[in-house]
Length: 167
Image (cartoon, rainbow, N blue to C red; front, top):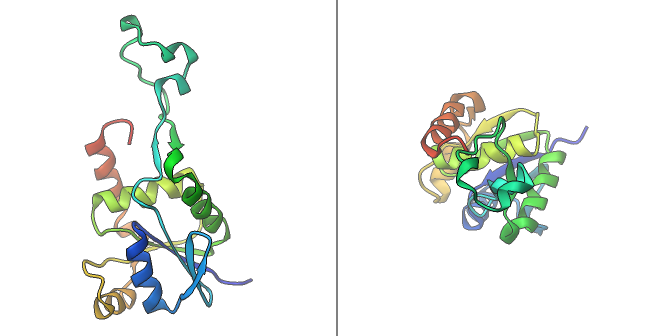
């Protein structure tokens, strides 16, 4: 089995810096490719909360009697503006044998990655790259100290709580 470690970054510039340190210098479709390593990016949130009419066509028109609209399960949809990058990330998640979340080291960064992991149904191992600077030395130090994904999962829950029921 070919190992493919996927690094999921928040922004293209962040991905380029991390890819350079990892030796992933070949440009792919929405990613940087190296030997058994791929680095991709999200362009911020690639998903958004589905509009009310995604739950029921009658919600296309706002009627006061229908409010509040509280679905059993909140739906997320792909943002049209960044749909091509979403497709690239989804494909790469399907090919990955391990995911390294490399989004910003905060609640929002965790949420951006975890909502994609959930939406794309990635089920493999997850680790977390925790860094606050993008210079080569900082990236190398963080790469040498990858955290287990469970260590930062609570940040995702915290971000969900701050954003309300829609995520």
